[in-house]
Image: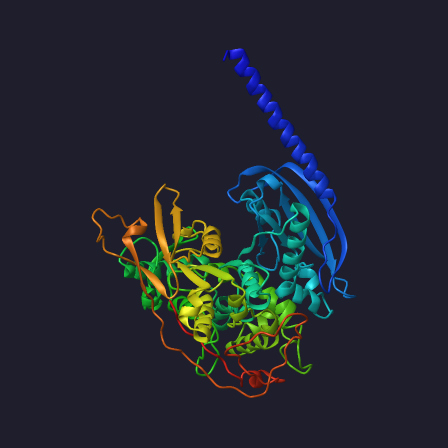
Length: 584
């Protein structure tokens, strides 16, 4: 064949290909515009807009921008006469790019959804994907001198992700002419909590749920995040962030070698018994000046790590940070941590079951100033909100019966959501259902040195969603999760992360020429599971709770039964701690 003939054929093929792409885009645009409003039980579609996007620049997680083509659908829902407006956005990739799956995505903090930040990566991988705002922003949950909007709270707690799944699946069926072969949920932090809630309350929505660093036990977690700041207020000792970092660094230096390697990572925090008060008198550089760690600072720091406690016998209310983790994210400023402060100010202190209670009349700084007041407001949060947003129901039988798979991982250096809260929940599921049954559908992995949803000195899971897909579709249950981190100096570490209740230890270079930076140099061994610190019985009086608008009430496996009291001493009369184990 001559060069001219070959060139002609190549140009013809290119033209044919371009024509096919253009034809596909026209067909897709017509299909996009022809979509009908989805049907959602107990909700009304107020509006729907659909628009075909061609090569739209979408920001990726790594900072790059990718041109993506998809049908962008925005659906607005409302519920009865309450007047909420819930936005659900669904991105539907071209049929030729679709992998046959649907992905629901989660949010962060008080945001129910991340929209483009989550949808872009999802459709890059071929998923049809959805995000929701639950109809809220923090301001419209509750305003000054107005009652808590329970519909919005219910949306955020559980309902809107369920409705997002219904909307997304309906539009997938319309757009592609067939249902998604499999549906997945992908979220971290609040997104992790949303995924756990789906498994607990709406077990048939998704075939697989990836719930990373889940902010479960929400009614306890949010007040507990204020404990480090409260400790400083109680002691009238504001510890500078640089001193907190120095104290955390001292703990890290002492406990880092316990896993067999000194690498800036505490892989075995359960073995760390280092006393921070031994650092008293150490000189450090702080804000370009030299200073010395004081006894008061070390004492405050130690109490921060212990976690919330009630007065009297110092009964533990909830978990604290793990050794080697700095509390500066929660207590490194002049104001309490914003998420916890908003939770107390806009929810706990505004919804008071007894008008004569002195709690509602106190501001956030007041209730954080004493251990007694902190314990009381902590208990009120649990009493009022556990059943709707606690996300701590260990009965996953319906999810298991539906064939669902639930995969979670948590960084042991998480500075915002305490890892032991996740392991506590996992153990409760095991206690209820037994280890063998749980292994069949629910696995949790720990990531030493990894901070909240990523970052830190440790190796981060490479593609946990792919591991979940392989489990759901091929029956390949993950025994470990491959993880990697490359530092700024170019050093790469790899690990095969262990599933609960195992932990990573260095195998001592038993393999010839092994490198402690490689996964092969580390082995999973049984992890610590210490005795229950405290488990108290409580009053038989059932506490007042928010009415759950939709979904079954949570089975609170070890729910504290509290007295609806009119004073702080009476509030403290009920159990300070239901059950707390230190797993790591």
